[in-house]
Image 1 (tube, rainbow, N blue to C red):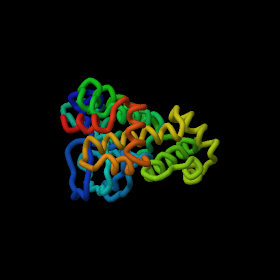
Image 2 (cartoon, helix red, strand yellow; image 1 turned 90 degrees about the vertical axis):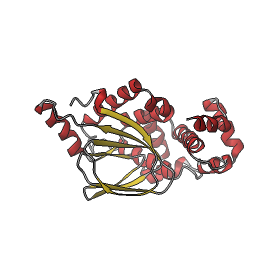
Image 3 (cartoon, rainbow, N blue to C red; image 1 turned 45 degrees about the vertical axis):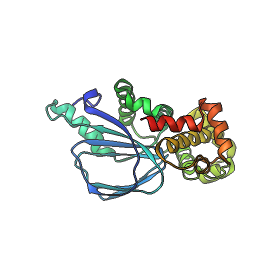
Image 4 (cartoon, helix red, strand yellow; image 1 turned 120 degrees about the vertical axis):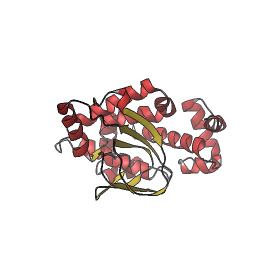
Length: 258
């Protein structure tokens, strides 16, 4: 199997609730966070999928997971073709079996940011899903970031903190303190690694969460506004109109139509 063969890849946007029993499957799976987090155990090793970390679940690995809060994940299934050339098989299996939990580096973060803004179109278009999946696999093949470059790990800690406190009043001071850096340095790192500012990133995440909740739940718009970190329904409506040119009501109707 060529890992970039479109017939071998299946990309989906999924949400999970409660605990899933220990199980395994005969294909590789890559799980990346879009919103929320999930505790997962793979072959006895526990970890958390959140803004800072994803996981590769190799074919045959026994795994279970627990998710309680609202969440959304991009799941890429990579099917195994046992008729492929032995050398290609070894390379592909080595990638998935050795990877396990991995940091969401800036290159992967850029892919997630694109998916956050184009989720339904991405998973609904085979051509777009194939291109996105190829880029993800290429990123995962790259060597892990050296510990001599701590900036990316500071950004990862900051992103995880933001995800965990999205419904609260976030300040750059608190984010920087949790990430172990100064406010000024945090702005520099966000610019270097994410090409954005902390507040712009927070605003984008809040809009994505609000849109997910509007499409996937029957919560009131006021409740959704609060869960996404907005003061009230009016603030959410204003933010959606300004950034995405839609209203909460329109987003909800779009979700009901699918």
